[in-house]
Structures are given as structure tokens and as C-alpha cells.
Image (spheres, rainbow, N blue to C red):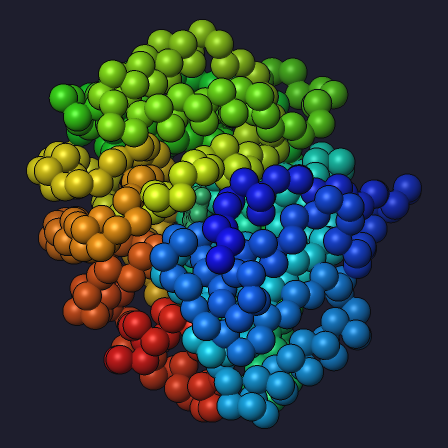
Amino acid sequence: MSKFTRRAVLAGAAASAGVVAGRNWLQPRSDPGPGYPSVDSFAHVDGSVLDDASELNPTKIYKHVTLNSGLDTSYTNRLRAFLADAVGNDRPFCASTARHSMGGHALPDQGLALTLSQKWIEADQGNKTYRVTAGTRWSTIIAELDKIGFSPVVMQSNNDFGVGGTFSVNAHGWPAPFGPMGSTVRSFRLMRADGDVIKCSREDNKDLFSLVMGGYGLFGLITDLELDMVPNARLTPHYMHLRGPDLGKVFAETLAGDSAIQMAYGRLDVSLDRFFDDGLLITYRPTEDQSALPAAGSSGFVSHVSAALFRSQLGSDAAKRFRWWTETTLGPITVGETTRNSLMNEPAVTLSDGDATRTDILHEYFVPPDRFHEFVGHCQQVIPSSYQQLMNITVRYVAADKDSVLNYAAGPRIASVMLFSQEKTVRGEADMARMTHHLIERVLSLGGTYYLPYRPHATLEQFRRAYPRAEEFAARKREHDKGLTFRNRFWDNYVSKL
Ligand SMILES: Cc1cc2nc3c(=O)[nH]c(=O)nc-3n(C[C@H](O)[C@H](O)[C@H](O)COP(=O)(O)OP(=O)(O)OC[C@H]3O[C@@H](n4cnc5c(N)ncnc54)[C@H](O)[C@@H]3O)c2cc1C
């Protein structure tokens, strides 16, 4: 069996479509372009087993098909044919793009797995919106919007993900001070199990709009979406060193006090001897000169050097302390002006480890800003006493989500994204499950919640408590998808049991 490596999948950034001269529209493009990473790299050699980014979810499938087309009639017809195949053979159907979810959310057990790997985008500068096929990745979107001076509003911190997957987990990132990505979506089209396509927005099919946003593909197949865009900008960073427990409150206050801030994130020191004691808040504001913005790049070479440093932290407190020094002391004197698009144009390849015995596992918790100091205290008690190696924590602000049913931000939240390096052993997995269970309990006691696209270690009871509308979500799923065509392992592990 081949090992899935993120390096193989993510290398090879998008070659992009051109802007049609004299028009505000971007040229639709239906072929994937040279060097486009094949998502089939995720498949095991015999093609009958697929996995996701956790490398811990090998799942036997019935069929795997990849579709690259742009938005035209043949696209819709081919999607209908795949769905008819699944329905006719009584198989679950599940769409995905990068399969960077980690709990089988993009994997249909014995089902038809559709990978949408597209590059179709059309922008409307007048309305400040753009339309994309669901399988278009952020790398393509940034490349295209950059050419006309625009930028995505909210996306993850990496550019590898598909827009449909991003909406289906209702992801968030570090553009400030926004809510989750769903808040930036105006409408989308959804194909139901019978092949019918309907438009969903805050005006049309409102209930489905809220169920599909963060709904993990359980209500239908998203074919394309219409999203808001904002002007690109030249930004300059500002670093604030502070006590770790103070980071959440200061983060929220800083954003509330300065509407010029466009991007913001925090970090905490992960060295075991001073775990989470120290923090850093980095904010980006526009510079005075906004003329002649450079084309979107990414940190490239610097990222790869950082990746080596990042990996050296495994089991080494000295390396962790050194990395913290580079972030707090070297960063402020070496990192300069950049653009909003360049900041968002970072592939996840920089995190790749290449170690077959370990895997990177993400966790994410959301707490109210004024409870963040308690969250830090809980982490200090739970994480260092586990077997897990915490390599990094990034802290973000998420404004309240007013739309989705499976809502992780009922009010403003401080999001803590933690990257652990986990041993691929029974011991490693059992310890991760135990630690996750404790962290979730503590976060729930603070009025917070955990993020759903990662490992399925929460108990059903924890899922129910963290997402108070989970039962309603399950009931509506059964109403809207009577044949239970749209299924994945998130359905199997959780929603089907409600
Ligand atoms: C390295 C890394 C960094 C990350 N950073 C962030 C971050 O900064 N912020 C954040 O919020 N999250 C982050 N995540 C989580 C990430 O946003 C989710 O895993 C997301 O699902 C990734 O998009 P994808 O294309 O891989 O989706 P997939 O994993 O392919 O799919 C996710 C879900 O969406 C459904 N889906 C996908 N396409 C469609 C469609 N066309 N129609 C209907 N349903 C569909 C799938 O069935 C599945 O349930 C990160 C994950 C990794 C591994």
C-alpha cells in the first residue's frame, strides 16, 4: 500500500486561467492544467481503499471517480450519472476535494467517492462576488482574484482546500474580524439524490442553506457557489508579546479597537517547561501606499526552512524554545510588508513530515474570549501529561455565526488550532482519544465547543452537548435525504445514531 503523503498531493501549485481583456470576468477553464496534483494520490494502490489526511481512516469503497470539468451542462449530467450509479446500486455517495478532513467525513464506506478537482472561476467586480465550481481550490481562486485586485474574504490558513469542502465544514481562517467562511457565501446550487438541482441562499431554500453550511455533505452535492470578495491590500505586521493566558481577551479587544486590522493570529509557546505561559499577537494593517501591489506569492523557501525547524521540535524542548525565539525575536525584525493574498497563499506542504510512523493530527477548540485564560489553564493540566507532541498552536478570532445549524460560534470565539504529531500505534491512538475526551469536557465547561472535521474521538454525548441542534440536524437529514444516499463516516459515527 502506498503511503499518502501531503507533499505529493499538495506540491505543484495551480497554473491559472487568464483574465479576459476588457471584461470583469475571469476566463472559465475546464481542464485541470499541467502539473495539477492528482487527488488519486490519496488512493491506495488497488484503488479500492481511500484514506484522508489523518492516514488513520483506510476505507473500502465501491468506486472512486475524479471530475475536472468546468461549469457546463456536461458537468451537471456527469454528476447526475454518478449519483444514479450510487442510488441504483444502493451505495452511499460522498463528494470531496482535498480530503483534509480527518474523521472519514469525506469517505463513504463501500460507497461511491467523487473527487471534484476543478479550476473554474468567474468574478463579477461590480457586485464584488465570484462564482466557482465546488472543487476549485483556494490556490486557483487567489491566483485569479489577485489579477483583478481582489482577495477571498475568509478561507483556511492554507490554500489547498476545495471551496465545497470549506463550506461543508464551515471553515474559518485568520482574516479579521469575520465569522466562519459560510458568512461570506451568497448562494450555492445543490444536487439532490434524484438529480434535481436547487438554488440555496438566505432567501431561497433558507433551511437547506443553513443545514448544508457546515453540514459535511449530508444533504446533497454542492455543484457551485457564489461568494463575496474584498480588495487585495498591502499589509504590514505588528507584533505584541504578552502573557499566554491574556491572549484571548487582548485579541478580541485589539480587533474591536482597530477596524483597520485585516489579518490577525496569535501563538503560544509550546516548550514543556513554560507551556502556554508566553503569547504573541500578530496583526496586519494596510500600509499608506496601496499602489502597484506585487503578484501573490507565498513564503516559499522561508516556509521550507521553517518546516525543518518545525519538525526538529519533535521530542526536543530546546528546539521548541529556539522556534519560540525565532517567532518572538527574529520574526519582528525580519518579516516585512506583504499582501493579503500572499499571506493566504500558503500550501499545507510546509507542514509535511514524511515520517511513516507518525501522523499530524489537528484539534481545534472555540471558547468565549473572556474564558480563554481558563482554557489555557486546562491545556496546561491536560496536554503535557499525555504522550502527544504538541508542535504548534495558532490562535484566531471568529465572529458569531448567524447561519449554520451545526454552529461552533454561537457568539464571538477565540479559536485554538493545535497540531499534534501522533505515533501511529494503538498506544498513540488510545492516548489521543483519552486526551481529546478530557479537553472537550473542559472546553464544554467553559461554554465552548470543539471543531468537527478532525478525529472522531468525541463521544456521542459530547457531540450532542457541543452542538445543541445536532438532533434537529439529524432529523432534517432524514427528511431531506429519505434514501440516505449522502453518507460518510461522520454520518456512520455520529449523526446516524441520533
Ligand atoms: C493542514 C490542515 C490545515 C487546516 N487548516 C484549517 C484552517 O485554517 N481553518 C479551518 O477551519 N479548517 C482547517 N482545516 C480543516 C479543513 O478546513 C477541513 O478538513 C476541510 O474539509 C478541508 O477541505 P477539503 O477540500 O479537504 O474537504 P474534504 O475533506 O474533501 O471534505 C470535507 C467535507 O465536505 C464535504 N464536501 C466536500 N465537497 C463537497 C461538495 N461538492 N458537496 C457536498 N459536500 C462536499 C465532504 O463530503 C466532507 O464531509 C485544516 C486541515 C488541515 C489538514
